[in-house]
Amino acid sequence: MNKNIINIGIPSKGRLRKDILKIFKKNKLNLISERGERDLLGSIKQLKNVKVLYLHAREIVERLGDGSLDLGFSGFDLLKESEVNIQNKINVSKRYHFGKATLVVAIPDPWIDVQTVADLEEIAFEFKDKKKKRLRVATKYPNLTREFLFSKGVTQFKLVGSLGATEAYPFTGSSEIITDITSTGETLKANNLRILKDGEILKSEACMMISKSSVKKPEVKKLVKLLSKN
Image 1 (cartoon, rainbow, N blue to C red):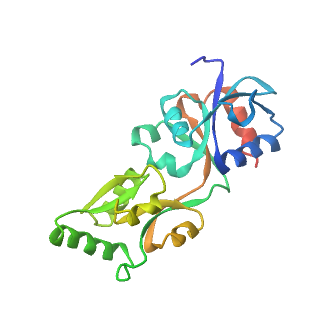
Image 2 (cartoon, rainbow, N blue to C red):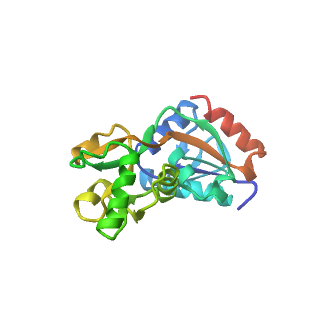
Image 3 (cartoon, rainbow, N blue to C red):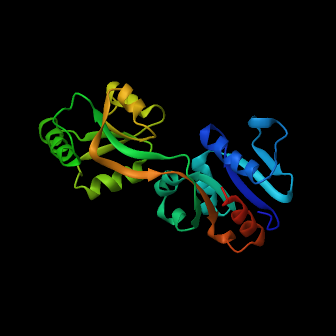
């Protein structure tokens, strides 16, 4: 990485990208991309030594951790899902009031006797004793899910990695329950899923993050101060 170039990571798509671009616009920083929204590289008109990279929000966290990005924008959930050695190399310098969502444990509506995580623990043991298999939990957040369930005393489960619409997994025979990120809970309800009463794993929002290897760079300090104004 060129030490004189400041690399900034911005999500390549979605609402998070749009809201973050508004912060740059509000602070009169003009982002330039030759091919518009499809471009993966960009620059800032007023800052010649800054390179903008449009990446998946998860990749932004990874690259802040390995130092190939100086500054980046992503969700707090994705930071906390990353490996501890990555988290230890990143500072959260600003938490914004958008991109708010909650990671939750959700179960099928017909499971009327299951209201809390303690009830889920009983079901998990029933699966093990009677069906000779573990309760399957579909998720895009294996680390946070495992940590949460273990902390609540639920140990008899198997994580199933989700590659798409996690809420469909219980109804396609791919899992019994899920953990998923939700803003309003409406998508879960529409798919006949219900959040456990004590099933909140993590509250998330959009954050500005800095690689710890870059915190002392004057240009990074200047950008952080500017982009913290919103």
